[in-house]
Length: 397
Ligand SMILES: O=P(O)(O)OC[C@H]1O[C@H](O[C@H]2O[C@H](CO)[C@@H](O)[C@H](O)[C@H]2O)[C@H](O)[C@@H](O)[C@@H]1O
Image (tube, rainbow, N blue to C red; front, side, top):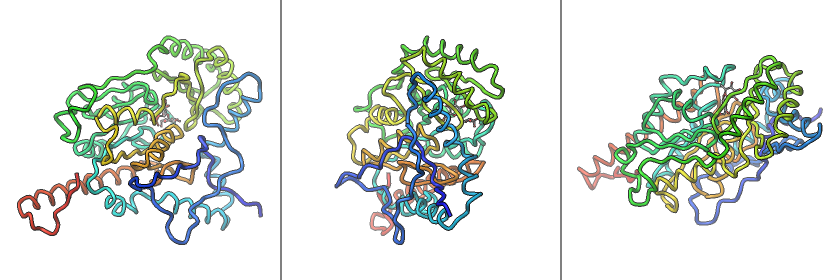
């Protein structure tokens, strides 16, 4: 039987960097009994599908569109539930254990650290739906995020434009990094909320950062051109995300994907300062500047006054390829925790995983446990102040 790889290749294909010696090791070591190395599929796909001329490039886009389609991945597992496939899933799970199942172990390593939370929106806080404008988050999820933000500085990092993601989340106390981190804004009252934020080191009272503002007219232009060129392709949808544009193909019949890719290519050739990346059934057109969700994470840590702190613990939860940039930053810093939300094994730089059921329940449960843990440890600390000799005295910030 042909070996069926169930680990979906995901760009960028970056080997996880080693954790520098002496750094706090929050990446889980492989558990006993497993090699920890899930094999990857044979094809390697580019992280950024840079636009070039010629049909070959469109074929590469098409390959990538197909490879990233969860329908294909699920079908592969369903059609070939071989022992090899099961072994691969097990190996992947050992390498990226469930952050919920490992919660107690994880928080043990967090003692004394200042947690900073980063979360992607679509597919992480809200379920993936056919209509992008209807990707609402549940009230229960909103309450969980609010709870987290009451204890830790919290940011939403999304490919969507900042206003749109704010309208979905509706929590004024958060930091929002829209357009893949190219539009960052913080709450004005963060200072009052979090003792942890270092007021002397933090950069500005209210963060606002837009590294791609000069691209605004170009983005408007490409948006109009993409609408015009793709209007004949049924099911396609072009979304203006202010500093980037999304071309959705979730509702386009697969036999028309190639025509869609060709139309997008024909527009992109006139915009050499823009590049194309890919998310979940979406092509994303963005400026060529070296800025991504990973850079946004670093920028926010710096703005909060945590740039060179050893005792912080950034936690990033995300489901998409663009979140890999943030996972990679955490790996390279040897600091923090990347959690991939996924229904099936994928190549990732994240160290932990959360299974993605349709209602994004596991993410919510993880956030709720975090709040519960923090609230309990605060109570223990309060008791320890009253009864200093208590054996339960803790030092969780
Ligand atoms: O960084 P994110 O917050 O994950 O944003 C990435 C893209 O998310 C949205 O598209 C995705 O979710 C839609 C609603 O569930 C779904 O229909 C689509 O297929 C997904 O790709 C958003 O609409 C895009 O603009 C973002 O780029």
